[in-house]
Length: 520
Image (cartoon, rainbow, N blue to C red; front, side, top):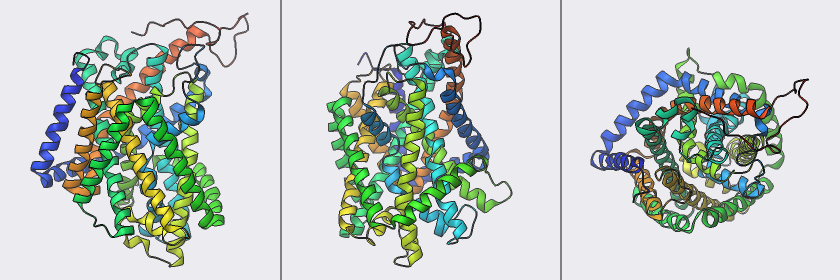
């Protein structure tokens, strides 16, 4: 127990108090989180939009900068995992259940229920539906993950520091990043992680329940969702007990195989030409309108503002609440890559795969709705995907693969989270004790159940926005601190776009040992 930090005990106490509160007074718990959520979205929506856009710009700057050649590790170090396995692991942890849950439902909602700007069901609504879906799951989402992951990987593997969120602030705050201030920072990060992962587990339980209900008439109820969470908790704890290189690695590769199989099957049996055309058109529209979408707040239109709060601000908060977990996990598996390679892999490639996913399943849903084969808008969100499958050949096979995929994504996300939470509460240890991981596994599942019990999907969304808000300020400090450290090293290594004329030789991070800069 001597290796367990005070962050563990403080955060466990906060989580336990939240669980007791949710059980004792579920309605009051839902009302309180809803009121806080309303205040944050109405008063700080502008802040979320500007912050997340600045994060993307900062990531793109680092890719283009000479700083991009700095390696996340020793100068001669090479990646621990192959590129394929690395991509599978970060993608499974970073999106997972969300892609399956919203793959058909979000584009359909933007098209037929509440478009961002146009009238429902129109050609303009069709264009907006995919463009805004790409926006919510594209560069902005992965930029949030990337910046947290990069800061952690740089200080852990390049500088040999503990893998803690608080340590990334050392160049900016100096000795104040330790002690009470550092503990507060890490507690905020751990709590945001617990709520963020618990929310996603809640989404997963709801969708598995929805799929079983649609296919086998199993009732949609909290009791069924409780059983689903319980079974998955046992499975992901077995995986967590086996260790990172065994459990998560194999599960992540399984996820990618199942996801690719489902994607290819749907592309073949679905409206293939319509999918490819809409994907191409939407990708161009996304690139063309990304700046306008990034800053759209609709101050003069209450209806449009409510849409932004319910979708864009919700997503930005979701990604921020997940960023400590996903960031730490991505950092852990990214040792040995250059900053440029790392950012390209984390920022660009997953976004493109997400776009293709939504193009396939979202277009199929829209095609079903337009053809009149079924009115998908009358179904619950968690049943939309299965109703889409029902309109195409091999529907039962597609549905079964989807349920299995949700389950494996469920297990991978929770498994990864137990490792990350264990790491953050044992002074940054890369091998946290199994007892600590078990505690966090039970904690995040308990929070998921309390949120489902108190208010279902709406309670899940409210909790996300509340938990993400304080960590967003820490992200600002992380960017400033990271740039200060990187700029210092850039000068020491002589990394410039154009070498100075009087310089006879040029040191590179690969040829010259990296001196440790004084960062305080």
